[in-house]
Structures are given as C-alpha cells and as structure tokens.
Length: 159
Image 1 (tube, rainbow, N blue to C red):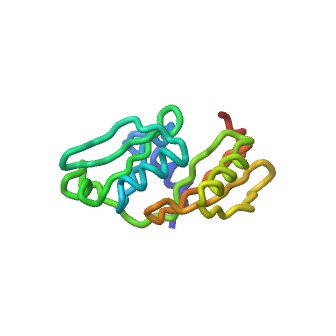
Image 2: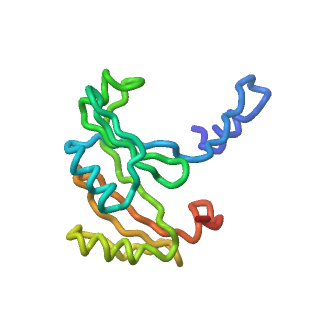
Image 3: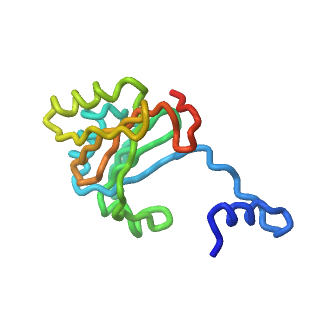
C-alpha cells in the first residue's frame, strides 16, 4: 500500500511520462443542495452576511454567494442538480463546511448568531488563537466559523 506522499511523488516524477499535477491554489466553489432555497439564502446572506453575487431563475434556480475574494458558495434545490447540472452535479451527505472569519471577530459572530436565536456550539480551541464555533444551517448542514492564527500546515494565516 502506498502513502499519499508516495503517490504525490509518483505523479510528479517526470520519468513516468505522466505530467505533474498543477498546484491547487484555492477553493473556487462549493455547492450545497438545499431543501428550502429561500430559507438557506436568508441564513447565508442575512445572518452570515455573505453577498449574493448571482442568482439563477427558471428551470435551474440557484443562489451564488461570495466567499472572500475568489470563492463562491452555491445553494440549489435538488431539481437544479442531477441531469440538469453540468457533469450530473448532485447533492450528498458531507461532514461540514468551514468558513474563516478575520482573526478577532469570532466572538462577535457568536454573539450575533445567539442574538438571532441560532444555537451555537462553542468552546473549540484547537491551538492558541485557532478557535471555532459550529451551527446548523436551515438544511441541517454543519457550518463552522473559525478564526485562525495558523493554517493546517503550521504556516501563518493571512487575512
């Protein structure tokens, strides 16, 4: 059995004749399949403050929200996916989605959510200055809001 590192080394080795994989430079989009598009838009836009950047109407309704400079969250009902979607895109179970907030703002986000009556699970500190809170969105998806001083690889987080 080969490890992920051995697999990466194999893919990058010119002697195999297989071109090296280009570096992934960030998350561009993530789509959640939602049962109630309007309730989900209200949650992500009105409560979390994500800006609506596009809206699809007609036979493929969806809402697209901005995640920072170059990332996007799509919300669409079941009928927008499947045979209607590019490459048969469909929903499915997942563990959770994590959104990073600027360092020092997590307490304010927590207070806002509680003031709006949204139950918050808190108390998660993974290491000094790396904290998170968790809530459920209207569709039951687990949403993490996190402020980070360091990233997974130990490098400093930037805003």
